Length: 515
Image (tube, rainbow, N blue to C red; front, side):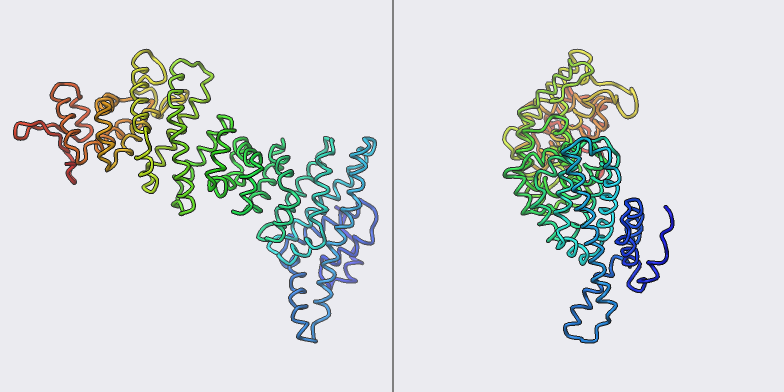
């Protein structure tokens, strides 16, 4: 870029570098030169000291109502700073007329490049001016620049051209809206009123990844508990497109934050969304539930209330769909999506029952334990019937067969049984009545497709036998009749001994008694 003339700068430099460049911008009508001046303003506004001039002037003006000796150059600065945004407004309005003509007549589109570059640079100036500067945010908002921006973005949506400058201007406009909304409730209200839901419905499924990310940033910044109700009542498609955006762009933090910090706090919204999502999208949503459950921060009360409802939803869907996993015993390379979703539902239930605040409701959930034991039995039998994804495989590789979609499924079933029986005599007795104890013992062989299977079996047997004489006696009898592998019991840290003419099960490890 050619170095700008120093003459205009010397004339007004005492009013600040931004204002100095502004005079050059206002005096130059040539689009290429105006673009250079705008770029210089944009670079200056990257620095906080230049962004805050307007704020300082405003603060001194308030004091000036009580103090008559206000320094004239500070008042001047505030006025000149507003002129920066007024000049940008004029450029945007003028350029929008050119874009309108291009939307109406295709012949005008070939001459649009300079205008699109000017629009993008104006948005960059506004974007930078808003960073950590509420004064500039308010001044820009009061000049109706949000409305001007939304008008241009609406034109960009209609403009059917394959130009990088068109896409760049669109992106920069979204960045500006995100920055003027950041930490500013007044701006958020205006943006929400002017953009919801149409802007988000359009941008969240845009082919450009950056457009999706910037729109997600705006949505996250403007969302609140109150505005979340707008998604629950009549604009479910916005929430659905956030899930879709996260699945397509999992590395984008904004869609993740919208789901984690807002959508998952609404049980009604999650229930409505789940019924309309595709299976891959359901897996994405369930993975985010898992991430929330296993995160470093414990669930706060608001999250717990929501997750108690999520637990009921997940448990009921798992009960209805659990047998779909049996299709994996016969499907080819194109694995059944419903079955894969059911596998993730099981994983969510394992993490939910690992949370003490959620455990009780799932231990009491009607029919859940019975379903889990039944599926363990059916997959165990399927694996023995013929070689398939449920067949135990010894030492294929250290991390299991990565091509097997059911890796860890039986481990999770046994883990869930153990969780549901933790300090719960009623569930311990249910597993006894369902013949679940011999089934768990029969699933203790080395299985490379089920990492930590032995460890989860130890955990389940420990929870099944704690303070439960009948279950202890059953395992002892199974061993005495050769129906329980002694080596397996030893690996579990258990052994059978005769005491007063009765067979009893005891732990070989030091620590509290299980009886």
